[in-house]
Image (cartoon, rainbow, N blue to C red):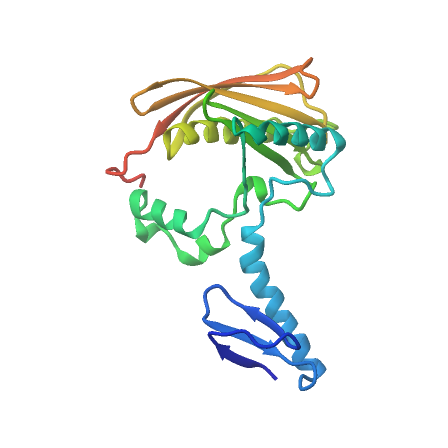
Length: 253
C-alpha cells in the first residue's frame, strides 16, 4: 500500500519519492507492499520522474552517441573554461518554467497560450533521442562576444543521401547566432538570416559553428558565423544575421 507522509522523509528501509510540486513523500515498505502495489508505485515514480528530471537534464554534456571528434573538441573547450574566459552553456529539453511564464507575461496574449499545449512543448533541437538528431554543445566568450557550437548531425537529419539536410544546418546556425545575440542583449528574435552553403556536410560528422557579434545599433544585433570542419580546413557554410531585442512594452501577438 502507499503512504503519503507530509513534509518529511521516511527511514532508509523504504522506497521514497518526493515530487517538487507536492509537500508529500510517497513511501512503499518492502515488508508490507504486495507486488501489484509495488508495480503501481514504480509506474507512478517513472511517470513523475520523466515529467521532472528529464526536463532538468543537461543535454550539452557527452553521451554514448558522441563520436571521438566531438568528445575531443568538448574536452578542449572545457580546458578553455578553466580560466573563466569561456563558459559552457547548459541545454535542456524545455525552457525553465519561470522563464516561460516571464515570456508569456511580457510578450504574449495569454488567451493564445493553452496550458496543455505548453506542457507538451519542448525545444526542437532537443526533441530527438540521443544520437539520432541534433547533438551539440555551445561555449561562449563574453569578452570577445563569440559563441562556438560543436555540432554532430545524426541520421534523422539526412537530406541528400549521406549528407545533412540544409534546413537542419540552418536550424543550428540560427540557434548559435541567436544565442550569441541573446547572451549580449537579452531576449531577441531573428529578423533576418542569410546563409551561403559552400559544401554539403557528411551525415554524422562533427562541425564547428563559429559566431561573432559584429555590431549593435539600438535594438539591432548583427551576428555573423561560419561552419567549418574539425580541422578547420573545410568551409561548409557562411552566414550573416540580424536579431531584434524585444520590447517589453509591445506584444508579439
